[in-house]
Image 1 (cartoon, helix red, strand yellow):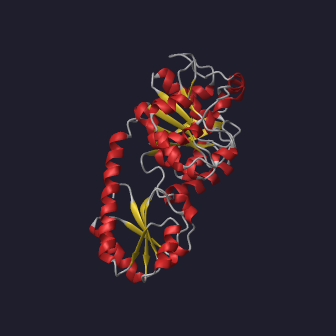
Image 2: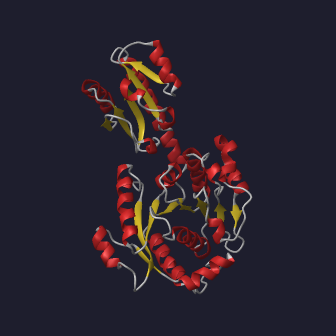
Image 3: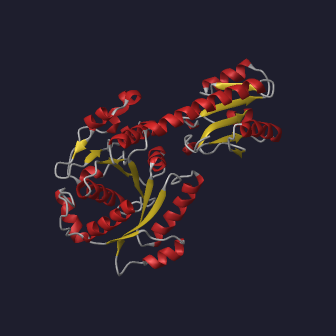
Length: 374
């Protein structure tokens, strides 16, 4: 299956071997776990989940991965058990091995349908580049860098750029531009099934001096709870078909929104600051990335932000400690950046403009490097 795997949740060796044999016929890779604990996964790494009876009993409906194909294999025919699992949202229930042939037909049919959707998705999406600016540690300056990066591509290279603020609880991007948005992607929930670029434009804000399109979150913790991965994915993919570049400001917290943003990214720009806390957070984040195959669609770049001669660690120190090359260094330049933030003006407003901020100069060098590497 394209970019997918099956996850078998069982401790029954005979059942596991037989199901893996069926999947192998269709060249489906599979992993095995004794219990389902990856509710955060939400079905993006695995598109097929196969639970044995005991494992299915242990999972709550809210933890079920969506969207995904989910099967429950019972050991005996029981109307009460089947009804119980149907109520939990598990619609594909089979008695195994009695209904092995029926299960085989059903799973093969579902996989073919999923493959067709994936092929169609590839035809519809993927035209624009999706950049996710992320850091597992808060306060690293990723929102500012994402904004500068988007402004530079829009103004200097005449790209059509959308900047999407995924910090749904408290926002952040709107503060950089001194705007009070009336609408956000939260308002797209009623039209999710037929989401189009017209709907996106209705809730977006166009920054007057740069032409940059801003798509903002509700900046409301209560409303943020109602935003799911399906909405975020739809917004990103719709923008991807109509913009040259889509820049995501991804929240540091691990949740379905941040996971979706990272998963949809063509390139992840991970922002570090030169201190031990930031390095520790990066190491933990890297484990999560590897576990859930985040960044597998493209490259992940390390950006060292707020470098200074008095920093706790140098770029060489960090490269050695992480065994990873730093892609860009952004100098600390508080006194040139802060006035622009206070006034809500863009850091670049016209092509070939002389840049006064060292931060913007460094972002320019990094953006040019990213464009050249394509």
